[in-house]
Image 1 (cartoon, rainbow, N blue to C red):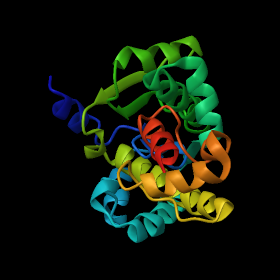
Image 2 (cartoon, helix red, strand yellow):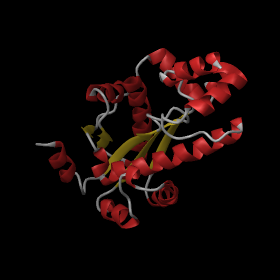
Image 3 (cartoon, one colour):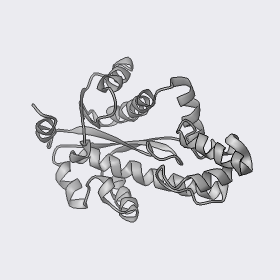
Image 4 (tube, rainbow, N blue to C red):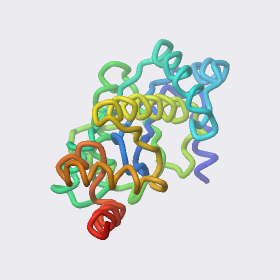
Length: 224
């Protein structure tokens, strides 16, 4: 059975879908969201306009996330840059950090919904998330697939995660007094400004320091 076949077979199965936002962004939180869809809810989500958040504008993502959160049970785990840097320093592995966050979201949703199936977008070694859930004593059927946003529950989670990421990026921008760009390109000027102002201590409150971008920023400031 292909991943696509597996997802199609779950179309009307009560399930939790999870997805993350901010993983590839230098600035901002890492956010993992989960959404529970009961039997028949996929059609409701589709009627709302739910689809992969990467195909939607930021404005539409923000508006749609509010609708999703009103319509379906949702959970969000938000890891600030400062906490992210602390956890990454201990785990030394992004997949383990992602698995930890996905597992927390799932653990919070399972008692509320009674779900026995979880669909997650594939990241790294699928066994990492399986081990995280089993380690917490969770007995669920876990389906991980590339382009998992084809599943309505995962697509809904991607919208909630992205909206939360954008909200937090706005808040962090206000805290440091400069607009923090999305993504991992075009970030050097802002990063250099922050590093020149407060070194890695300040930069680490808004950025994921293990990115190679950090050393580029340090070099840029030192050469200026």
